[in-house]
Length: 297
Ligand code: ADP
Image 1: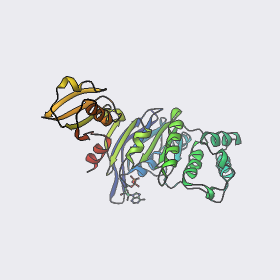
Image 2 (image 1 turned 120 degrees about the vertical axis):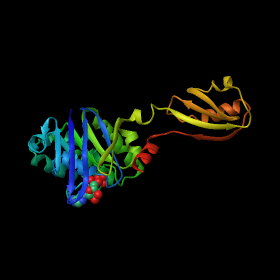
Image 3 (image 1 turned 90 degrees about the vertical axis):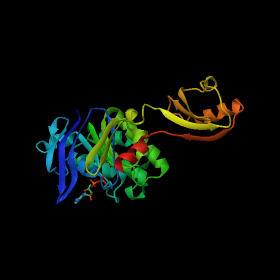
Image 4 (image 1 turned 60 degrees about the vertical axis):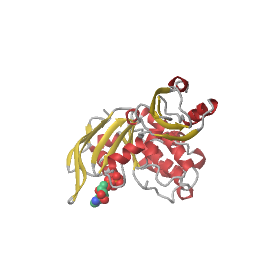
């Protein structure tokens, strides 16, 4: 196991920010740490990285106890904190070389990391000239310099425009191929786009910890459709990916498909090809979003 969190509780004065939190993450997993603002995500990440201490419980990173073997554990951790603190007056390369020298890392590594996060064209610019997306890349590069096994990314996409979002997400995915990644977000689509597992946290407690496939109901999709005429079931089974068809009422059908691809156009085409009119058409997916809303309601 790369990360083991056991019964962590954190009190800020009277306030319980984390309440008996436990989970573990295997080497090579990309896990989304999802929860609304104030859920306790940053607090958990600061405890894992050894920046603050828990009130109760234990954390192990690559088998090192963060409270008793902090230095050994931190050697295996790359951390991109929320609000990514950078020296804005420094040049990208200069900043990374400065970080490298603090950690006694060779200049060759700086070049490798610059390439890895796609910062080559920007490496001679001052950090304050960079967009938010590129600043996050600099933060990510700094977190990767000592080639850690575990990456902890606290809300890495906050404040980015859609293009920057897509870029940083695919970068996290690429970096995650040979690292263990835990990244926090309050954006659901982000988890769907990047991770294979999600840990849902709310009011300091874990309320779900599942593979994404389980949460999205194994990619099933339910569509309710109303035609203008009654039809026989034999006709409807010709729609591709159809798993079952239930005649809810007269001309209304509930169709279940075994794919996550949007099948509404196929249902529409089916009606058209068979001389039917579609009076209404809606998806009834109990997708991650609904689950998220239900769980945190
Ligand atoms: P998230 O990252 O999910 O937004 P945080 O871990 O930042 O949540 O915060 C969890 C709770 O702990 C919030 O209610 C927040 O106000 C509180 N909190 C966080 N940091 C501190 C602190 N240094 N002192 C007091 N309360 C804090």
